[in-house]
Image (cartoon, rainbow, N blue to C red; front, side, top):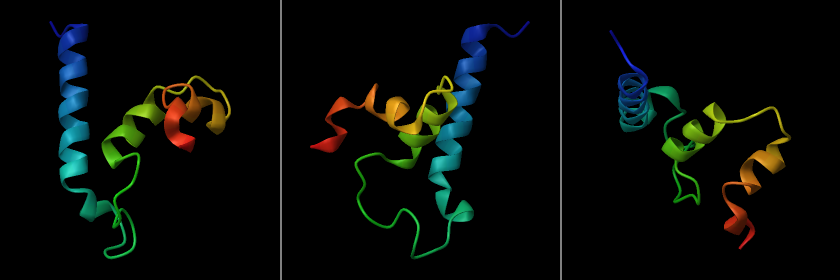
Length: 68
């Protein structure tokens, strides 16, 4: 039986594999080319945890220092 911890581990593994191969999902030379405040892994996890608030509320709640 798969428990909730195993599900989270599988999800984290999928996110890690996706971000390690981010070039397969982006326009080479244009997307994710500069050093961003929020890396792809953090963006994916944040989007998966959104609770139907506005994008501003969803980003500034977990990352209050984003404006700095």
